[in-house]
Length: 179
Image 1 (cartoon, rainbow, N blue to C red):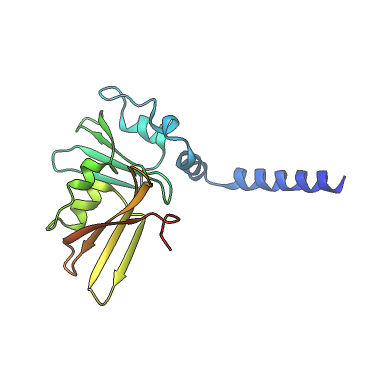
Image 2 (image 1 turned 90 degrees about the vertical axis):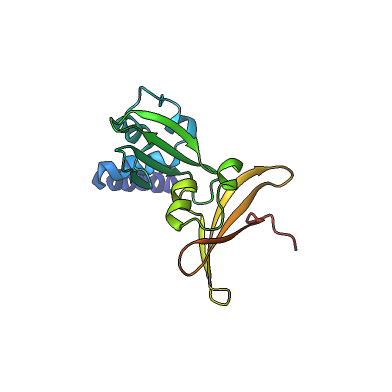
């Protein structure tokens, strides 16, 4: 009987918390953990709108407004997820494309001379950012599914103090390091 009472008490506390929370914050939290097919599967290029995307996928990590009036929404999936979706909309707010940004083709496009903004718009939010004082570098790392034997790895972009890529590298994903 005490176990049932504790469970009931916990359920009531959770309901009170949810009822007292901002409805949009609750929706954003739910959307952040939705499986990708639920978040993006109903969106159709040429048909879906910005409002449709926000309703189905929730609040984006960042909204990029382009000079031509088009918009890009960035949706990284999980703190160490291997997918980041970029949703591109034309100036009228219609979906043009959904792109998985953490692909081999996009990673290959990161080259020395690119700015932090260029790289962020291409790959999305990095999973990790590290400062290295001795080499005077800031390193952004993305967890991505590279295929092959290990399946996932880290792609690293090394930035100079003035914020441009000086080199790129690959490292093992957390949990795959060799002793």
